Image 1: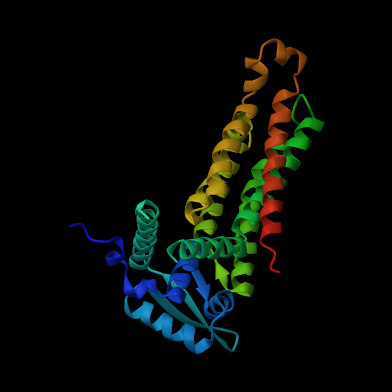
Image 2 (image 1 turned 45 degrees about the vertical axis):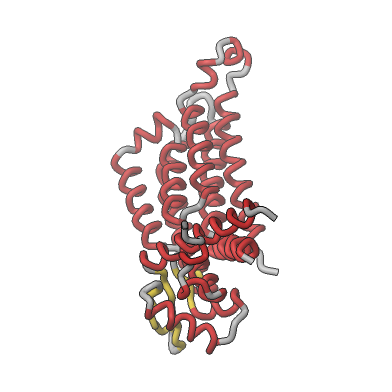
Length: 104
Length: 188
């Protein structure tokens, strides 16, 4: 029996906000905390927690800098994170294909 | 659910790409440089005047200007492209223009201009930049080599301006695509 595509989903990446973070970073390579928060419509605490999870998994790298006296956190995607996102999207598309071909 | 998620992710990527302004900035800069240079060329026809000198100076400046604009965008909006790559591209083009200005004189400006667009497109994974650099670059280079006028026989005799028209057409489309991308990047 072949494994259902859903079994290949990565729990770290699959969460909606984390998928959004990785998608943005895959396109632009880097974004700051404020841009991610505003684009994804989440709170500071919520975004911080998700970034921590992605950072612990090695999917993003955080770089804290100062612009004048204002702290600024830049987030970049790592090659591992990019691979994980590509795999996740491929799995989601495969899942869609399964839904389309399943008999009703 | 999966379909909605994939569509949302595509929308997020489109938004991020538009916010980074890379397509708009690079296409507007390259389109403007090409259009001005080709109009100078047509105005001074048939000798071409000093348009090659314009391209020699303006091509590295177009990419340097793009680099500065993208750095400014990164700083103000907090979303960026790897501007270091664009910076090195500018240095490479400046060196190329200084070392082999004759190549631009012979082949026209498009191999260098669109080669730069292609490299930026590959760097930021933009289908628009890669696709247009290949199509526009090929057409523009053929126009620079007087391909259309020579190959079209009688047509070349009756329409000696065909090469200039193709070159200016490519420049205009490049600029139009840049303006369209800039328009798309406006935030509500």
